[in-house]
Image (cartoon, rainbow, N blue to C red; front, top):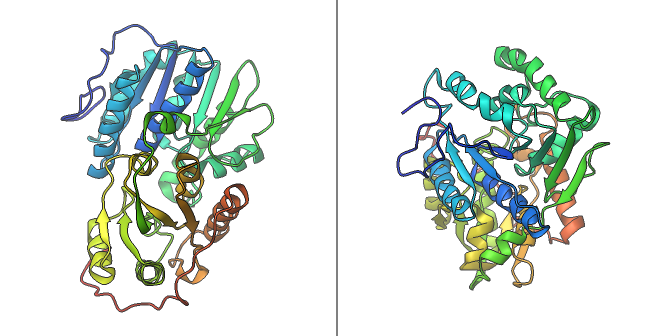
Length: 380
């Protein structure tokens, strides 16, 4: 299967491409982006706005993400959203076919909702839009970097991606243009809908995402005694050294009695097998974003997390349940060789903001985690 507007196997149905134009066109590429789109739609409906919303799903390649996206797309359909399912990443010509197929809808849409302003695909699609209203919804902690870059006029490049290399250079002008298109002014209104503690750039409307849809539609959860540990993809993104990460998880497990490990959808199976073998943790592969999994339960009475989006979202999703969320800082010694210079500063900022806003307690491994002699049979 390749190209645009292909229906994914066992995936959600979509509206025909030649159907009526939607008032709002949303471009979403991950499960959490669909979740935050549902939160945005719910807030607008609560306020009396009943837009026609078409969600264009642009799934990644990895099976775990695709499975979660299918589940989230079903929830979106149940909430009355129209769906278009495109496959820009399954063939060499996929991006071009997607651009061609979506061009008419992008031109017609009066409002555009973006799930990831750093996405090169979204940045390539953005110039086709004539929308006078643009909303950027959360794609996790990337929102913090988005606001910082937009406010300073710098091009939109992810914090852990240096922006160098031939591909980075080729996309430089596209990223710069995306930043200009996402700046309010000249008859264009820009809204930021976020769970993150940010100050919007001048002219941009800021609206808080309190995860009200999540709380109203799901739970409250059954609570298990003990602690659950929340995984991160910092190893997969090249930020944290794999041995140091596994050693830290082992130390946290021993110090705090964690019994389950909720894997990030991007964590690799070989890494998780090693982790389970060393720590004895039960590995849980969520089929939905963790905010929904936690809200549905059962969930541990204490959740231990490294710096990530969930230290900002889980306190909102689990408000009033009695579940405690605690955060473990990333020690600078855990960083991988070649990690971006600003990586530790960015991660520290995530935890500092979460502690300030939600009063999260800190957790640490029992002493500095050693570089455990994990077998090197696995290729990372």
